[in-house]
Image: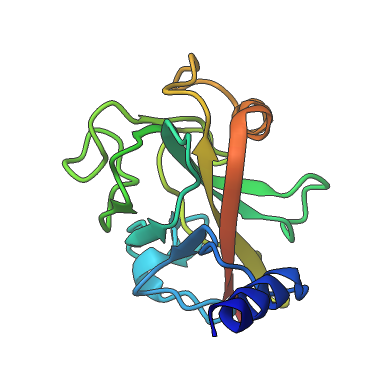
Length: 185
């Protein structure tokens, strides 16, 4: 019987697509993947009238060796030729597994101690919610968590999002994403 179980376990391990380790994942209780983002999280400005509150985010199953985390929100559909960075927060301690709603307000009480929020394409640090041009098809807002192999990035709040992205990708052990949608009529 023991030999049979050994063979079954080996067969399962060899079948493509079956994994014994849980995958790194990112979720939000207020934004479901591929669903419309609510006004609570929409930008307040540029003609948009949302509350501009960053959503609560939760992550699980970070890989072994993770020393810190970072979160980005990016709109690849913005009509800029290079997309639009809506949020960049890094140096989130490795013992944190969630960001509370409104953690994207620099200086607010919800951001983790020691974290840094850097420059977005709105021209300032912190969360800037969706606000696509009127009449565009729904834009995709990609929320990504990075598990990093370093305790902190020596970057400042004035560092452009693209440069932070370079450092995130150079130091990533893993990343997980989900996409929310938003459009204006």
